[in-house]
Length: 337
Image (cartoon, rainbow, N blue to C red; front, top):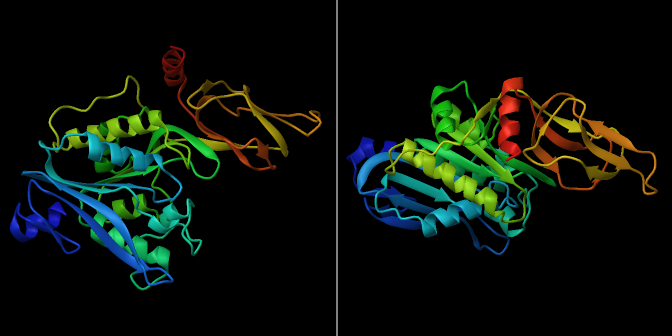
């Protein structure tokens, strides 16, 4: 967006999907992507905030999976409660990116495809592909940086963490500025928003926090602080980012899976440091017998947990991040305070 404005007319009025937004103004746009069975328009709500002074363009996207709501809360709070008089550059906020799935309170769209495996999409493809293409063309490609907001999927919950390709310097800078205590390295899945955006030259990170189908205030507050840190890092807002007391890069993690089916009793919490061999969960049959204890295969920190007490063999129970011994000791001090 800043790219297009700078290339065409300097820091002047911007045309976004037919709506003209001048410096110092804001616009609320409905980005049409498809139609329903009754020929009603399916449109993505987008808020564009333009500073009076030039600067980069940052997009915020939430609810790429329609049942992941904490990102909606983050963007809603930022738009409604934060003053934007000193904004430089352009902020493009997409609180409900996946409108059809959001309306159904479902992770996927009605065609049962996953939007976060469908980028860059096609304007002539399925409903999911058209939503992806509209977001890619009208939001992602027209911005300089991006933050995609997620929660745990299905019946899982995530400790606040960032996902980022730390081998890309611009992405690593963005991740450090965000200020999450844990940054999990990775390119992201093929055809995901993040991986596609980075490949297109738009450094993008993913914030993961909390559970689907609910607003969780601690996750929302952590996300708001991170977004404001990014805006300050990019000189889009005055001030300096507020780093966390500790920040770790996670280059190795794994999901520990149930060995037996049954009724699950979790023995750990999100964010908890664990030692190798420490009990993570205990499965029993309905009679409370035939117990199966699941133990940590290595020392680390619990980044994700299932929230469903009923499990099959092979179900993911605990996402465990590996840290160096000194890092784990430092996190234990913070955790026990």
